Image (cartoon, rainbow, N blue to C red; front, side, top):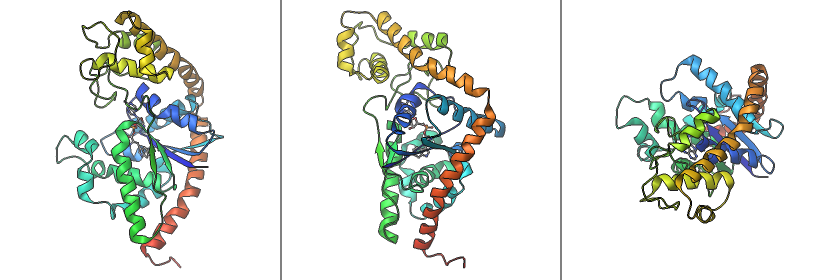
Length: 329
Ligand code: TYM
């Protein structure tokens, strides 16, 4: 059974891109794989965040993930900061990764905006991400398209470490879904949907009310051509909506183009809006149920962290020995 690891940041409201690019596949993976999923709160502090907001966001995201179908009997869900071995391994890997390769990371370039006053943690973010996965000897990492570069770096770090110290880490592979890996902003469809870099009106939040979701879809930007056809260069808005519906319904874009042949944008958008609402409504209902018992979420996260830690400690011990630290006695 392959081991799967993936992570999601607690800060920022979760949107349908997170769901279609990652969460949905995490849930699907749990029946056939040994899965560990982490709420990566250590990554969230690479930019300033209010303590109360961080605490609240972590528990709220755990509730959302359980509501989306993560089953604590099948998967391990835990908060990254509850397993301090992530930070320890990140240090060892810091001494393997190079400044040059971190400087090339597009996410760092985007988030830092070329400023010097960003945290060292933001620069080092991908090394902590490598530690997350290598700590559990995970072979597969289900993520959206935007994580591809971080996954490549993670593989390079693992291969370099193994070359220097002898086989230590499984070299992981990204698992990027064929549809839904890059859901775009509905107002600025050349950008990915994101609560940090996108527009509010163009971002479909998983906990938005159905009325709000419908409004956001109906006001998505399109073009004056009037034909429901994918053309990323000339029709990015319609292409984005087609990709969204294709990911939700799991049907190829070509068959959607056929379905909407001769129909107007209004009909098409209405169907996209209803598909979005039908997707999130059961999740929202379950979220409301689970929110009434926050103590249960804390309890489940503790069970998750205890299990994760039991897997993390042997890796860190092996790494210490490989590097050449003297035994503790
Ligand atoms: P994060 O929290 O930004 O996103 C969580 C997951 O959602 C995917 N995603 C999208 N997929 C499709 N369309 C979009 N518009 C979209 N936006 C986000 C992301 O690709 C991701 O899979 N660095 C990671 C968290 C992380 C991690 C890890 C992931 C930390 N350690 C180890 C894998 C393995 C992040 O910030 O994801």
